[in-house]
Amino acid sequence: MTEAAFDVVVIGAGGAGMMCGIEAGRRGRRVALVDHSAKIGRKILISGGGRCNFTNINTTADNFVSKNPHFAKSALARFTPDDFIKMVQAHKIKFHEKKLGQLFCDQSAQQIVDLLVDECKHAGNHFILDCNVKSIEKERRFIIKTTRGTFTDDSLVIATGGLSIPKIGATGFGYHLARQFGLRVVATDPALDGFNFSETDLRRFEELPGVSIDTTVHCNQAYFRENILFTHTGLSGPASLQASLYWRNGDAIEIDLLPGFNVSDWLAQKRANGNRAEVKNVLSDLLPKRFAEKFCEMGGFNSPLNQLNDQRLAALSEALHNWQIKPGGTVGYRKAEVTRGGVDTDELSSKTMEAKNVPGLYFIGEVVDVTGQLGGYNFQWAWASGHAAGQAV
Image (cartoon, rainbow, N blue to C red; front, side, top):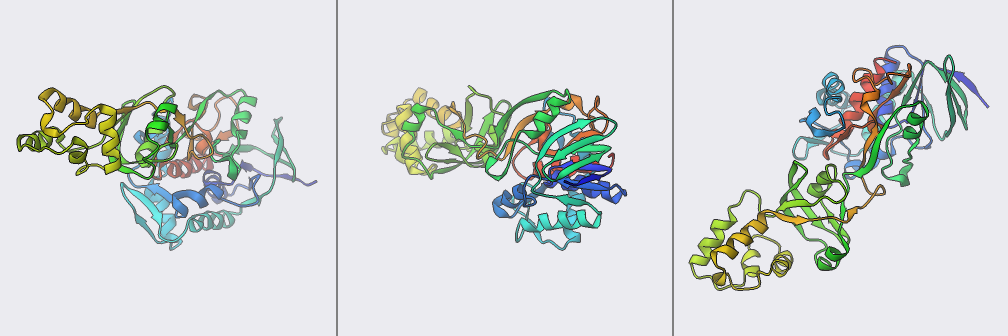
C-alpha cells in the first residue's frame, strides 16, 4: 500500500473538484484528486443531453435555493460565467445559447471533461481513480486511508456531490463526513426532478402521456414559463423540473395553462358570436385536444359554449389560468438532476468554503446547501465554489 503526502487532497473529481484542483495547482500546491469511479466526470458527460449545459450567462444568487440565500454571492461574483466561457474559448470549444442564457457545447460534453482534465494536468494535479475512502482522521494533518493507500494533507476538500443519480456513483459520503466533523447538514431532497401523480390523478390522466403544454408553473412564490410534459407516472418537462426545486411534500402546484393570453375575453367573444361547439372543441384551438377533453371532463364543462352563463365562463377562465395539482411526490434521486440541501452554509466561510470550526476542511459544489435552478446554474456553482476553495487551500 502506498503512502503519499500532498498539500491538498480533493475527494471527488467532478466539476467542482477539478476546478479546485486547477486553481490550487496554479498556485503551486501539490494536489491529489481522489475519486471512487474509474471514469472522470460521469455526471458532466450525461448532462444537457450529452452536450453539457456548462453555464448560464444570466447567473445571479437569485437562481439558487439555500437556507442562506446570500451565501453564494461571494463565490459567484469572483468566478463568473464569462470566466468559464474564456476557458471554453481558449480550448477552442464551439458552443451556442439554446435559450434563456443556457450555453451548450455544439459537439459533446466530453469536451468539457477534456478541458478540465487538461487544465488539471497542466496545473500538476495527480488523479487517483478507482479509489474508495475507508476513513478520514485529523491529527496535525488529515490522514485519508483508502483502497489505494494512505494520503496525508494540510487541506482536505470535499467535492463528492449529492445523492442524485446513484447509478453513476452518487453517495451520501460528503454528508456523512460533515457530520463526522461536527457540521450540520440541511435535510436533503431530490430536486430538478419530475413529479409523480397521486393515485387518483394517475388514473385520471392515464390517456395523456406525451402531451406537452406551454405553461407558467407556480410553486411557493417561484414561477417558470416553460413546458410541462405528461408522462405515464406524472409531470415532467422543464417547468415541472424547475418547480420541484421549490416544492415540499404536500404542496400544490399552480399551472397557468394559457400564460399571457386573455382567455376570458376570447371565450366571451366566441360565445357572443353564438358558438355552439362543445367547450372541449373550442379549447382545442388553444390546447392539445386530449388535454382539452380531459380538462373539461374534470371541471364539468361538458356543454356547448353558448350555454355557459357569465358565472360558468368566469369559472372556466379561472381554472385555465390557475389549474392546481397536488403531486404525490417526486420521481426520486434516481432521476433527479441535483440534490437540494446539504452541508449547512452557516458552517462555512462564503469566501473560502472552509469549515469555520475545522481548519483545513472545505466543502464545494453540490454537497453544499446551494442548489441552482435548471439551466446551467449548478455547473456555474461548481466552477465558482471550486475556484473559491482553490484560491484558499
